[in-house]
Image 1: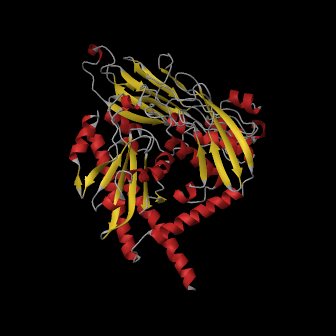
Image 2: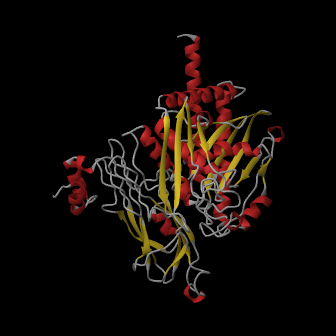
Image 3: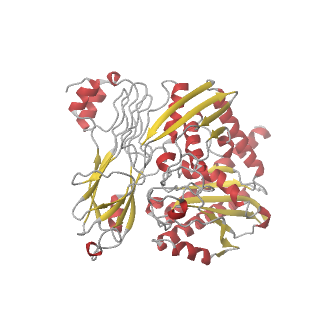
Length: 556
């Protein structure tokens, strides 16, 4: 075997090893985090960067909203702390929404890696913490100042010593200080794990620098993405997608341009920023819109700054996809996680018959709290104070040749929190958690099924729900290529009264919370669905006999 062939094999082995290193970094965070949304649902990310701060590898565990925002977030630290000033044992932190992952609940932790005295790399990780003060996990705020405590770019650890004064400020402004401290230290620990494994790798392969490997990874990835773009038809396609919004409906306007091997997604004309906290900062908008492009155009190409650099984004400052500081942004994924569908709407015109239907999109975060301070004191006098999060997931859109996945987070990719975990943390219990019949959009390939969840209190006391992230209650996920829409979402009391908006609502004593998640849109003409598949759906309860006759013209 030639030397060039051996060198190529060695390089690929090192690349695979680097991915294993960041995956171990992510698993360290997953296993040590205190917050259930991190350790149970996997709402996190981890990545390694070269000495210039360019992301060269990411963990498989994590979300696009975290990984793709971190790709640019690391560079912002250098404006405050030049690489020449960094020392072994230092760790840096921020939760700035515009320079991090889009809202205050996500902390970005960055750790420089030294081989001897030489700075050779960086590790960064992020996760969602349970509470940052302010109005909590709610869209009610009218500015980011009301949403919680913003930590600018600061040192979390200096030459191996934790900055307890900074931690004290963070914890003094949180309703769940023990959990938050545990999560922040877990981020530090995860980066330390990555650091140790990277140094071991470099020592094993006798590397004094990561730069040659980094340049190979970034160059190869960019080349792969460019080739995929060149295989696309040239042209310009536009799409509009209505969303519920908060104080009023909003419209996402997207325009895709492919020309001369270059691809641009343009959101010019999108609705103005909301006065409430559903806006998506540009960094988060970029993360999910580029994810949508890459998922269709170049899914086989590794995700790093090389491949991400092939996609350009255009936004208008002051819109809901590029809000100006201090616009409120806590529930930014209400808009941000819908952007993959907005991009798919354009791609479906460029690639007819090859792009899935719309999905439920934004995950519904069930922010459940005791009602202390929101009802007369005598109603909660003997009740336990608590604050927990559960995750409710809708359906994915039908795909070319496949049904959509049921109760699956797309495009975020996070999981649900086991109900046993939530019930162990508070006096609430789940009366129902079941598939919602007829929630999937009809089609040759039907959409993904959603679910019904009903939650009540074991105590004789009210509790509250923050509906900040509930959407597609007015505008369902659209079908594609003749497919039908998914079912609209529903949020109400068990007694029947609708929950009217994205605010914080009291569930009265003895009543319950009921949510029915949006279903995925169908793909293709429903009349082309095979009789065997319809029969199977009816038999399993996915589709009712009435819907089978109505949508598929099939009477059992």
